[in-house]
Amino acid sequence: MPNPKNPLSDPKALSPETQLVHGGVHRTAFNETSEPIFMNSGYSYPSSQHAENLFLNKIPGAHNYSRFANPTVDVFQDRMALLEGAEAARAFATGMSAVTNAVMSQVRAGDHIVASRALFGGCRYVVEDFMPRWGVASTLVDGRDPKNFEAAMQKNTKLVFIETPTNPTLELVDIAAVAEIAHAHGAKLLVDNVFATPLLQHPLQLGADLVSYSATKHIDGQGRTLGGIVLGSKELITGELHTLLRQTGPSISPFNAWVLLKGLETLPLRVSQMTASAVKVADFLATHPKLERISYPFHPSHPQYEVAKRQMSAGSTLVALEVKGGREAAFKLSDSLAVILISNNLGDAKSLITHPGTTTHARFTEEVRLESGITPGLLRLSVGLENADDLIKDLSFALDQI
Ligand SMILES: *Cc1c(COP(=O)(O)O)cnc(C)c1O
Image (cartoon, rainbow, N blue to C red; front, side, top):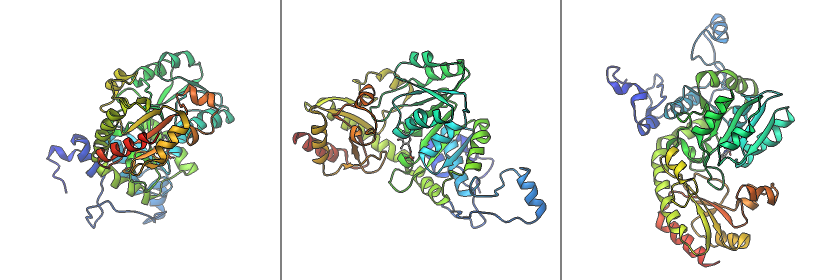
């Protein structure tokens, strides 16, 4: 048992690396070191009176059904909340169920959403296609200039939704500026923080009300499971969002929450190594004659380099590159690689490359793709844990084949 007189017995006093190893743990009577996996769906009670009290919410922290209350899922939520500096969190089966429920928790028929148009494919689908079917209108704007959000706000705008850096072009949205605009109009700001990871950018500190993750990406980071999480104030998380989780059931399996917990323990090591390699890869690619341009937030050539430096502590584990020669050249590059795999996933220990125009963004028209910077020669590279020199050799060989 930690000594309560030691100031480090307060988990908030710990550094992120330490929080991610110890945060949220409640040991059982067996005093296990690693977190236990509670795969049970239900719970039994010592008496009918106890059951009644529990269902009347008179027993704080009690568990009554694993759809919305499970000890292993609790540890994942508590550890993430500690890292994010959030009052509360709810985990979901996937990143998409996390985002969809975060959006739904803030709007009802007759409301309006403003979102940046450069969103992960599924997120854009929710805002642009699903929400209007239920009577929630949406306006998509070019997120690079905060003025575009101001111009799109309406009397009934309840939610502003952004992703930064964006998928797949790594454009940025100024979180603090957009938070101010949203709040001036009485709307909440939701930030999908997947590309930055919870370590490199802190949306809640910059003014966001809710932050969401696909835990499938860096948090697992080893290609084993899907998962998602939403964090924010106690009011926003334990209110409507918890009710949606409880009553509609997009719940995470306790086993998957446990896998993600193990991922959190090594997250800082993996993200810092992958980011250091991404910087090396970006530096190598930036001057390569076969490329039109690269996009990396901490590379001085990034048009929003100044915003990156202001709101991020490093440039992320992803690099976007535009090959001269369009789709044919981009395919040639990808197909000539030996170490980097062709895959639309990201944030993984294995380096992954994807051609967004023909995969993640294939359903959009060429016109819509181009307005989001998704040109035929664009590739998105997720830098993994391999030796950076091997990655550069792999890319160098493949570029020479074009
Ligand atoms: C992957 C991803 C999602 C969706 O997460 P899933 O776990 O695949 O459902 C949402 N937003 C961003 C930015 C992502 O990269």
